[in-house]
Amino acid sequence: MRLLLISPNQLRLVVAPLPLGLASVVAALPPEHDFAVLDFMFLEDPLAELRRTVASFKPEIIGISVRNIDNQDSREPISYFPEIKDLVDRVREMTAAAIILGGAGFSIMPGEFMEYTAADFGLAGEGEEAFRAFLAAWAAASWEQVPGLLWRQGGALRANPPHRVPELHRLPPPALEYFTPKLYEEAQGSAKLPGVVPVQSRRGCPMKCIYCTTPRLEGEAVRAWAPEQVASWLAAWHQKWGLTRFYFVDNMFNYPPEHAKRLCQAIQGLHLPLEWSCLINPAFPDRELFHLIRAAGGTMVQVGNESGSELVLSTLGKGFGLEQVELTLSLLHEAGLPFNCFLLLGGPGETPETVRQGVALLEKHQPRMVNLTVGIRLHPGLPMHRIALAEGVVGPADNLLWPHFYLAPAVKDWIWEFLTEVTARHPNWIF
Figure 1 (cartoon, rainbow, N blue to C red):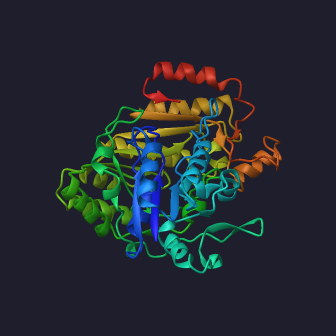
Figure 2: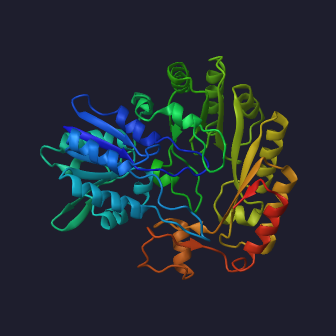
Figure 3: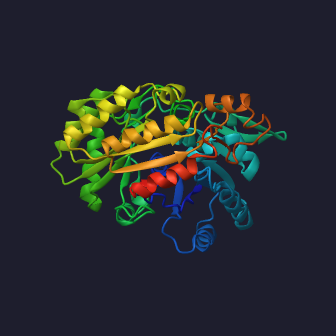
């Protein structure tokens, strides 16, 4: 069977993100299929290249990976999924091939995406094994056995529960060779920072944040590759393409702590000139780990603190308190490890006082950069959505594929002018 797999993303928010999810699906494709990969990121005329590829390759199935839904900006929301619908429509003009959508963005609201785009199929959740099952089911159209599949039957949309790969170590390494990884490392994004190549060492999140989609996408149980296996990927990618800068996309690099320490030791043992960064959760401050990150080439960590208010941290379901945030930031200073922080402002219970507490906390600890987000993007079925329903922020019939935000009434009219003053004092704080 001839398969054309497309990464349509051309956004370079902060950095240009290599499509790691699609690279992982490509790596797991059964060898009996012919396939082509089309990455739009660096193409001057993606549609022209798509036409050429469809005409010459004549695919029977076209997969489209959806990364971003919108820009998460409550002030000036921009939706990206209309571009996916337009791409589906353009593909239909070129070929009768079946169209299947997938990817993290699609998996957040798969039913809404299917209705809006009118794609033939969708695949929600982790795709490495599920897409193989879809291809195996193609001849007999036995869709009921394909995990995470959405399809139409008798005029109705049907959906199977998504699949999570139980043993990640059995998966092949992501097929970066189809995505010009050196170009991603050299490309600049909107932040004008050097590019990085994404790498993942574990999936799953046991935390209970009321607004976060990660447990829905990856599950609550943490599954991990062996640290030595991940380190071997870095060594191979360095040898093959000269890659030196990486970013661990793990939702919590520092959990489980012992896995993170083993990974740092494995990376350090490579004795290669690698630089990397990661995201850590303040629920697990660990002096030894932070020193290991620095010794293994870690140049920066992002701290998911979100607030400087005990009340707001509790309301958001963060699973840690202000004492753990303070300890984490102090230990990072001690380890000589630069860090960025986040403030997620405007959630339930937010007041001018809690906003000021968050600003004061970060002014005290002086992170390299602070990302300010105002308003919480609502996703269906999450606790934050239920709160917004109860307060009348949205109604039951509202389609959350279109961006809706929760912004606490106590700060709604005040916060913008205040943050303008804050960012004038701190040019490295952005919103």
